[in-house]
Structure formats: C-alpha cells, structure tokens
Length: 332
Image (cartoon, helix red, strand yellow):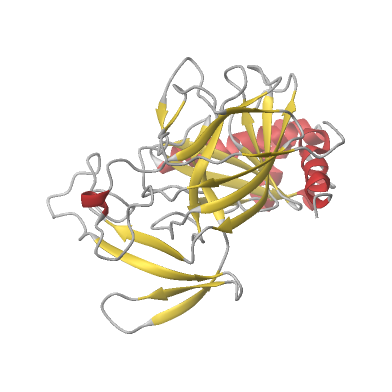
C-alpha cells in the first residue's frame, strides 16, 4: 500500500447504474487511494414527499455509484474496502411500504391470497448536529428520536462468470447486503472475479435495524479507501471492525444464508487460529452471534460475528483493516 495519501474526487451527476457487472469503469483507483464521492438513495432521489409513491415515481430502484477499476486486482485476489466517513447528503430521509416489497408482505415468490401491504411513505428529519433522526407516525401525532447511524446497504464487485446482477440482489459478489455494520470505521472484504474488481456502492441509510424490514433511505457523501490483497481469495463477503470479524451469507431461504455465514466464519477462524475445524465450530457456536440483514429482496442475508478477543486478538488478512484505519486517521 502506498505511503502518501492520494485522494480521488469523483462526481456522478445522476444515477445511471443499477447492476453489478456489465458496465465500463468510470475511473481507476490505486491500492491505498482514498475515494470521495456521493451516492443517491434507493429511490434515485424521486421520492421527495410522503405523497410520492415509489410505484408511481420510480422507474428503477437501488442505483450504485461506479464501477471503479482498482489497479492490480485480479481474479483470485481480495478487495478491501474501508469506509472512512458516511455523511447524509440531505436533511431528510424516506422510507416506504409498497406492494410486494418487504419481509411482512406477500411477494411473487411468497404467494398469499390476501392483498399486499398498503403503499405508504414516511419522511424522517435528519439532524446531523444532534446526531438523531426523527420519526413521525403517519396516522397519529406520535414521534420518536432515533440515533443517527449511517451505513451503506449495497457494496459489491462484478460477479464471476460474466454475469450481470441487479443491484438489489445480494450474493457472493456483495450487492445489497443491508448489514448495518457497514458503517464508518469498517472494512469489507470481497473476492475479486474480474480484472479491476469493478467496485460499486450505494443505498445509503440514515440507520437500519438489525434486519431490513424497512430502512431510512438517504443520499450519502462517502469517503472510503481501497486495497488489494494479492493471491488470497474470499468466498463470501467478510467484514472486520476494530473488535469483530463477520461473515455474510446470501441465499434463499434465510436458513441457507445462515448456514453459509456460519460455515464461512468457522473456516475463517480455522485459518486464523489453526484450530481443528470441529474445535472452531464449537468455539463459534458458543462465542458467535448471528443476525439478519436483507430480508426484502430476491436473496436474503445473514451474518455471523465473533469478537477478536476470543481469538486472542487475531486479525484478518494480515492486518489490512488496521493499516486502512491508520490511513484514514492520517487524513485528519
């Protein structure tokens, strides 16, 4: 990784990309470079008031910024994406229920005889200075203040096999993971499938509960850094924080996403500690935690997490997270 801090500023005038794969890169990044850019919300900025129903004003959903070609990234490598800052770009965010979307409604593949949920939009006030967002009920005067906790719901690279995947679909390439741990200070690891990796991201949320039933969608100012881990493959998205390691699985039904995440975390613990696989299985079973992410879209996500203290301070990928944290700290 380069020692000098190099910053790339990229402005995307309007949301035009709704896929991973199938698009030419917008610019190139070098390992160790910092990228500053913006992302649009999942409604492409079209839902401006509670009267703007997504089914009426949105032609597509979940635009992503990019893709970015990362120099030196080749199939079989791992791309590290460190989120430095995430800052809501507007003082409001939107959320909605609408037909055939969400965990608690009928969908095309979850067929029910009753009608789908009513389409309804909520607007949240975002107060960055106070660090809160304000919920307003639509059918009463009930309000609540919730902690502001910005995250990116969608981060990914081009899939393998020349596939083009809609940005709403999570899978091994990343995509619409909707894991709230994708906040500032976190490093995401993604397996590289094509030359340059072709990183793209978006779907900012002012906050999200553990499992996306509905999120507070907002445009986001994003600062991140990238690095390439040569000769090391990553089978499923992995996350490292200052104190935790996480594996993300994506599949449908949700129980298979759970199995994928647990399997990947167990095998990662084996790699980091040298434990026998059943010893690692036992340790993760007792010390790990599991939580859902995306439960709205064509695939669902689960993540499995374990504290690094349990692993005697083991770190992923030879300390890349700590190196990128130090790079981020040197900017201020």
